[in-house]
Length: 184
Image (cartoon, rainbow, N blue to C red):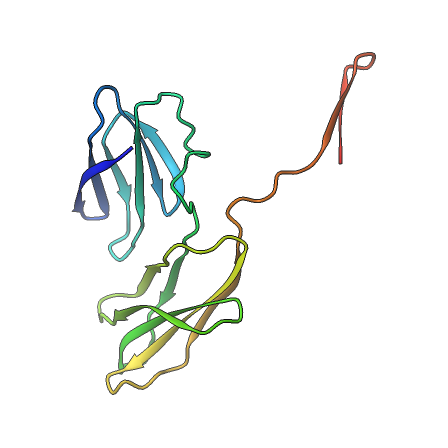
């Protein structure tokens, strides 16, 4: 399963993604947006509604298998990403924002630097892949034109759980009453 090319077209708030596959014959495409399955079919083109400042990560799996299960066959790490969103600072001297991430009790690391745009009200950044069953905290630090840090905005902490454990239960059927009983 390989996508050999893609094309993005944006018209207002609609972004259209078109992919090219090297598979031959009948091809089925399964689309994921920010790690969540959004649909599939035989079309190599899909449109997404995004606000003018929105970001999203689009992944697609191509296959010749009509019975492909898009949940169990999801891309590696699915959906271990997080979209961080914040509203711009009202301070007039903010030039940029430093977005940082900390895993558990570790050190802060810089994910992105986002430049302030006077015509933009809110911002969003998508994290890299996150580890399952780990705690993360993020902060957005406004920075003025002189390079001084402002008061950070904290997001989290949040525990990433991609695949929760299945419930453990027993099912019994009583033929006399035709009742089904679930128990742990």
